[in-house]
Image 1: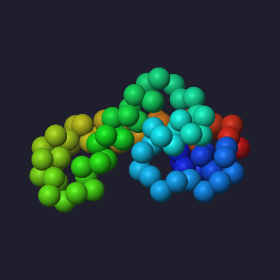
Image 2 (image 1 turned 90 degrees about the vertical axis):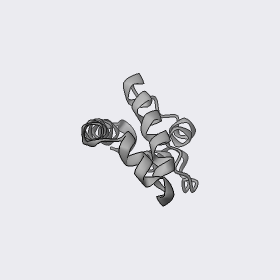
Image 3 (image 1 turned 30 degrees about the vertical axis):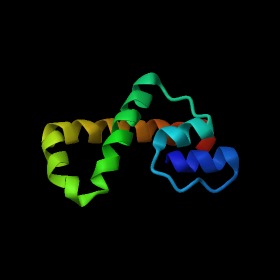
Image 4 (image 1 turned 180 degrees about the horizontal axis):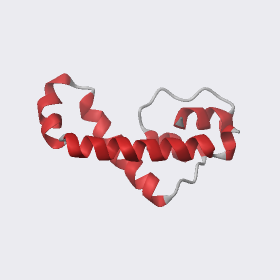
Length: 88
């Protein structure tokens, strides 16, 4: 969804990056502070998950309760992004 906003605002193909904060800044999106802070958390969390050798350590850091909380907050951010005027 962040890349969709980037594309809509810049009328260009988004860069090949997983850095959501970078994409948000480049697209000029002004998210509520709570959403921005959460995206910062998941932005940092996604880096080690791409490396299998770190998987067991990551599983320990993100028990089911944390995963459920992240899932619910992700749904809230996606809802906000879908309702943003850029994509109407």
